[in-house]
Each structure stands twice: as C-alpha cells, then as structure tokens.
Amino acid sequence: MKQKPAKRPASSERIIRDIRRKTRKQYSTEEKIRIVLDGLRVYILKACCH
Image 1 (spheres, rainbow, N blue to C red):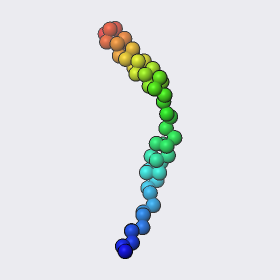
Image 2: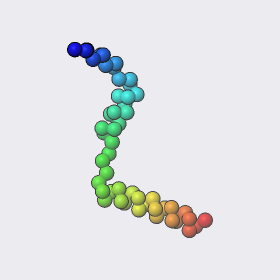
Image 3: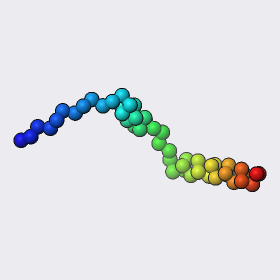
C-alpha cells in the first residue's frame, strides 16, 4: 500500500480565512430581504434625486 504524503501545516492566512468563515454572522431569510430592500431603497432615492 502507498503511504499518503504528510500534510503541510496550513498557512496562517488560510487559518484566519477558515476562522472568519466559521464565525461569520448567519443572517435569517427575513434579515436578507430587509438588507436587499434597504439597498434598493437607497438606489432608488439616489436615482430620483440626481
């Protein structure tokens, strides 16, 4: 049987990225809709005022 090569230790940047991914805020469906509607409202206000 072949032996698998030993894994290299992960770089510090990779570790930080993994931590950020795992601790990222989880938005509910309602919160996502609210964020999109707020952005759309701002976009419309800017388009109408200029």
